[in-house]
Amino acid sequence: MQKLLLSYVARLTILGVLFFSCGSSGTKTQDITIVGTWKLKQEYSNEGGDTPLKEFPLSICDKATTLEIMKSGRFVEKSYYENSSIAGECAKNSNDTRGDWKKGPGGMFLFVYDKDNALSLVGSKVTLENGELIISAVYTDRDMGPRTMLKFIYSKV
Image 1: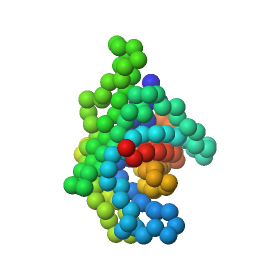
Image 2: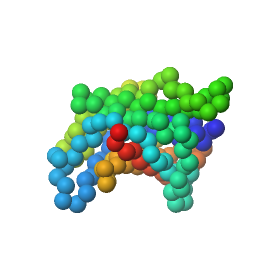
Image 3: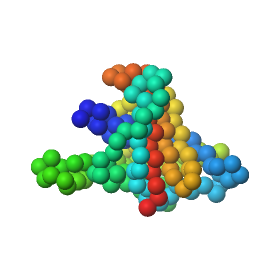
Image 4: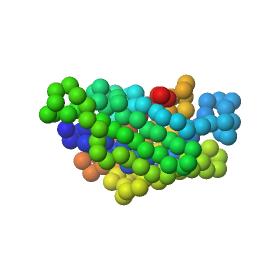
């Protein structure tokens, strides 16, 4: 449960930092768009240190998580969890992750989360590869250690 909570907190925090977006070779940055609705497909973590990334198994409810990036400059992530009182059903988290985003110079995207950050980010980036939105972040966590890495893969809905 603690690992799941850490993953959720990290996902919320990642949206509150500066992201760098890189297109595939030959793609101009002004042609790149992240506007739309994205569904969480995969998640990876190295659990601290210099260990390799390992896939974090997502439940059916985790895979219902969506990230909507709007033209208005807002974003909202809606996450779901397994409802322990009703077996096999997913419940929507009552607190959506919200914030502002804008496209910066040189293909950078700035995402500002509406609440305080919970983690100390060392670096992050967003890439669009083969139609998937890939969010990668490195952060320091007191429980998991320095240089904890997370990677989230979203597919466009």
